[in-house]
Length: 134
Image 1 (cartoon, rainbow, N blue to C red):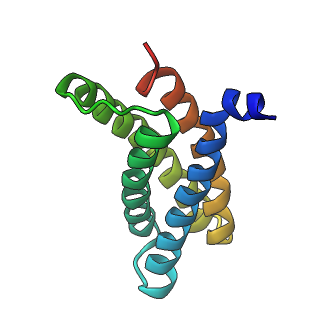
Image 2: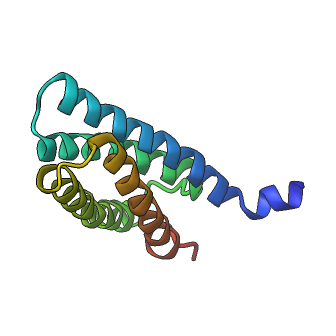
């Protein structure tokens, strides 16, 4: 069992922090959209920004165990992380716009579904490009 946990440590931690990131994203979206009356796309963007900041910190330190803070490391990680997240953020906004504003679907359900797609794409980018072990 310990060997499996060691082998899949990054994936397990990514799932845990991905769930927490999704909870932050969904809760902030719901607060902005439902409680504060902020429009759908703006609520999606606000939620995305806060979730991405949380995700960078947790992914760097615990998921991919990147403990280096030198200029070269950060010059690679920060733009690639936020760039990849911006690409999936645009996908998230597009899904939410089409599903909620155009098709009038249930916003919270679509937010969760959109997050599943985004999490998978973000893991692949993080594993293969952003925090790639040398």
